[in-house]
Image (cartoon, rainbow, N blue to C red; front, side):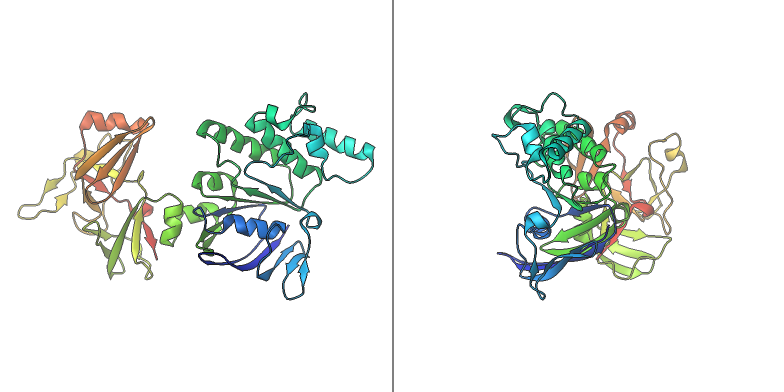
Length: 373
């Protein structure tokens, strides 16, 4: 299933210019609230009309401004799962599923029966949506969409109003229910965990434009663009001065960064994720110099963290731990440094810190550094 989207529309605070083509079955669109994600989905569904552009699914044109093509939503064969599921409140489960189906009465009844079985809704057929749990409502909404076999399913922030436990459960259920669906599913979200879990291909949108796109896991590993790094969860950023192809100065952190691999020429920022720092204890000092030297014995037995050796000079890639505050959370401990750095330590590693005390420095591992535009 291929989809090609090229939509342009003047919005209140920015211009929406979204253009992509994909053959992926699971596409995620990640962006902050108000960046144009939902407008993109509504344009594909025909709920909103772009000022210009073209939308094509598997060779079938849904919208083409130049050719004056603009199919009505019910003619597009696109399923749209709204945030609130948009079930008819006065209609039973089976009538909600049957809504919009064509064919004889017997054909409709058979299709509803299949959907009730597929989405585990047995015994709920006569209930109204108000008497269903959030998970049951989601299954009914998806059953209604799947009943008419759409080419594309659009998921618009489907978990945004849920608590963390229910959200996790429904994400798992949704992925399982869509496993045998052969069409394309596009999900928009401002939640990085949702899109990482769900999508094969990712589009990151900022102020109505795609800032980076590609394979989801690769974008999280190497986002390239600062805004993409922020949206995928990076907390720590510094402006840089590139000294040479293997050395830069992280100006906001006051440290030198050295690498074995070549630093990309485009680099104007460095990013580092809060969970990736390596604590370094017992750093001695060179006589007459303030730079720390690695104490090889300090790393022994630290199976949780494995300090690397910097590519150049003692003291490179090390942040002095100058603590400002600490936040105790149920599953991690967050340390905030005076340099504006966040260091997050997961629960299973906290015991090591309590045993040894706070480290003298935090190391930046080269393979975790994000070199960004």
